[in-house]
Amino acid sequence: MSQIEPSVLTALATAAKDAVSNPATALALAATDVGSDTATAHRDALVAALYRRPSQVAKARKKVAQTPPDPPAPAQVEIWSLYAGHVDAPFLRGHLHHLLLDAGHGRRPDHVRGAAAGYLDAAQLLLAAQDGHRRPRAAQCLKRAGELSLKFKQPDLRERATKDALTLAERLLAGTEDEGRPLLGVLETLQTLGCDVADLAERAAGLFTRDVDVQLGLLNALRNASPSRHAEIDTAVVRTLLDAADTADAGHRRLYFLNQAATEAHKRGLPDLRARAEMALQQTTPEWTYIRTEGTIPPAVVFWHQDQVDAAPDLRTALWLTVEDIHPVMRAQAELEADGALEGLLRIPRSRINPAGPVFVRPPVEADDDLAVAMQVRGLGLFGRLTAIQLDRIGERFRPDESKMTAALAHETVLPEPRARTFARAFRYYWLQEFDAAACVALPQLEQILRQLLRPQVPVISVARGQSPGGVDLMGTLLQSMPKAGYPADWSKALELLLVDSDRGMNLRNDILHGLTGTPPRHYVALILQAALYLLSHAHGQRTPPGTTP
Image (cartoon, rainbow, N blue to C red; front, side, top):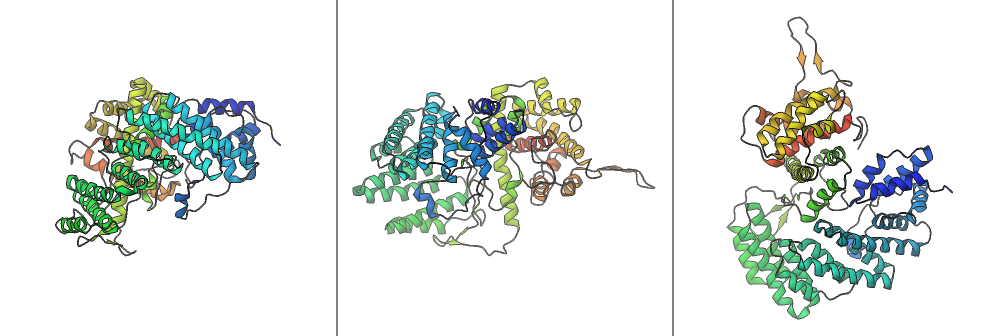
């Protein structure tokens, strides 16, 4: 059996230090030179573990059939087992034991206790940091520990998880920020552990009133704990949805809440409220036929993206963290693997509301492709908002001047120093909220980065022949040439919608540089910067090379 490689253990400890997400740890570990071929194999196996998600052990989640991930290679599992007992970082220790439990490796009780204890220790460290941004992660750790302690009958761990969850709930209730979502997660964990959360839910219901989903979750928690109040709480659930419909800022959101209100009133036996919701439905004109998930980003997602930047060891690494592949929004069932934080955000329902009553109607499979394109464009917009969150955090944390940005961006062939300095100014304009200037400076650099990337694979310059003067390919042609150079077609399609599609896309390059629009929104400019960084990351070797499938 292999022995632990000291260089790998040291690199793993360094990468995990102060990191609050496994992808951030994996990124730092993968960039570390650990020496020998054996050590490199160990490092790569641990990187694979960091990107792997453990099983969901809650019984409620088993109701929906899920496709299990491909089993890990036996050699990988052996390496995970080597390091699981020697890792100091508690979350990472718990994660490795959880993966070994999933793989059926070794003694199951050891891995159950190792995983649960690791998650509980990690929750304590996150709470001790006195950083409100870490509380959603602490809640997630407690949830995993509680589920494991229940499923595998570990009463001492269950008691500890319950005690820590109650402590976290009190802290969230006493906090100054709107932390309803992490609190709701903690209450769900406590209910799973068999605790009566009626008092906590009652107190929270009067504090967290901004988020409709949180309000509904707290009301349902009350209903589960207080059978005598079912009628009162059922009425409150429907009235909450009706109130949300009255304050909705768009017609389709109003339709959604009214439809939910009518459905819940029907299920809970409230005919008067159902009639009120149905009447309001019939009097509401939809802005469009199809509805979608709104772009309101949950606080946990915001915190996760900020934590990624906080965990980055330097400015350049932080910049690469902003360039999540832009192409998943081209896929109908796209999901992000951010420890579950973004799961489902890009899933846009293909259901249509029937204004005559609370009935969902499925469109035919051969529905107009315009819907798919609209979904993709809205997905790009969401990516822009997430990128803006991270760019803002980079500006706050590093406060980079022009020289630091130039050094972080420069590449010998794709973006030489003079052009890197120009591109750096685009970021400086962005952080000064001069969005027109940022976009106008960044777009030509984006085009040049793409041209230089494609040059070795496809011709991008035509020489003069006869009456033809020759010239260089412009943005539209360059994007269409990406598949020929080995880039997946959905990447080029995403960038076409973003930059040059005037019919159904954002068309940012043409609208901004041709003066056809006013000041672009902040998240549109963030998308432009992200697209340039995404292409530049290929030159720096931070992304999957052309010709491979991501």
